[in-house]
Image 1 (cartoon, each protein chain N blue to C red):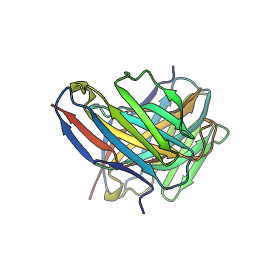
Image 2 (image 1 turned 135 degrees about the horizontal axis):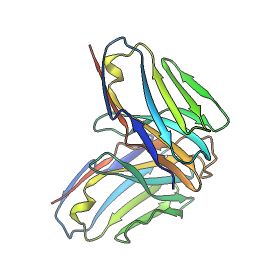
Image 3 (image 1 turned 30 degrees about the horizontal axis):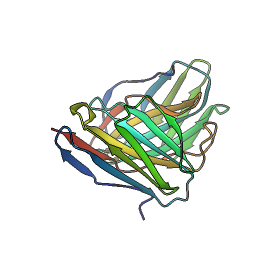
Length: 116
Length: 111
């Protein structure tokens, strides 16, 4: 059973298009995250949601809009895609938001986005 | 602003060797530090989590140490195997940011 799943696994699209990446976790966690891993393999947090509420937004362009319909899902919608958006996007979840938490994060397999 | 650095960026060793991966962070006021493993085309797997009050954690052939005051952690892998080949990422939690990652060390264990 997959704990954190993402769809699609690969996404190739043209500049200017709008696309969505879906994430689902079946761990019963309260908190979900989106990370971006760029071409230099640097992994950075983009957003964090706790109980469907946005709690972290790390200066991500407003073309990126996360949506959390329920605690188990955190989807990422990207408008007007740009070349620089090409990266691997990882979804993750954890049992608690508190940064002092002893709970680790569980990561999805990633979505490889290529903008042409 | 917290920054995490990992050295070396890449490492190649023969099977059976013991090895050490290094991680350093600029702000010692961390809550915890984690080591992850990333396989090509796959997500991240948490290997070890060390709380700020702890000095080390062990899991099988892996041992991670934490020296919070000096801003350093090491991941020791004993008797390396080809299956250990992956990218190893260090990440710390501090302030209000859940995880700040290093760029990783790409490990190749040659049979």
